[in-house]
Amino acid sequence: MEIGASTVMRRIIRRANEITKPNVLLDQRSFEVDELWTYIGRKENEHWVAYALDRNKDVIDFVVGKRTVATLRQLTDRLLGSGVKKIRTDRLTHYRKLIPKDRHLCSIYGINHIERKNLTLRTHLKRLSRRMICFNRSILMLESCLKIYFWGAER
Image 1 (cartoon, rainbow, N blue to C red):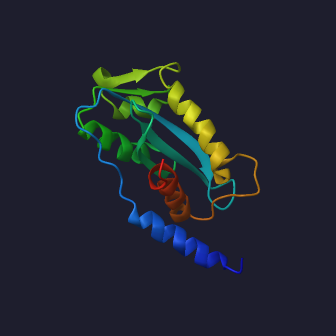
Image 2: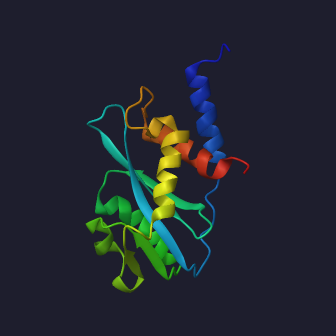
Image 3: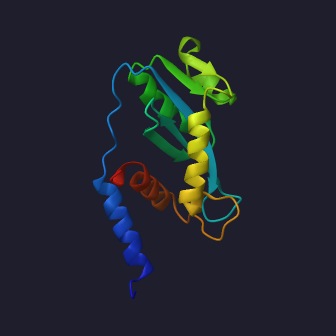
């Protein structure tokens, strides 16, 4: 096709910068939150994609970073600021520190939609697969690809 790799990367980043995050509607009933493992550059450089689904199974927000409380706080603070009634998560202890008990539902059965979305993401975006030749080389490209996948495609 005679297009350089840097040209493709610039176009992906440009397209992602044109996309705006959807607004989190106030007073939502519930969100499902989960994280997904990936790496940048080499497997020792682990990163996590934490994201939230609404009742319509649409991705509302995501954050990419290390698996720390600070990374997850970025996501949970935005969700809590919307006045959400319940946030469903798995049993990761970081969530207990970040989400008030009256709004937190911790169960492996309450997050089946987001777990299914994890499998779909790994299938559609090969850069998130565990044992592939394709991988992420920068956080910027990973975030750009996720923005295009979640909110850029006409569905």
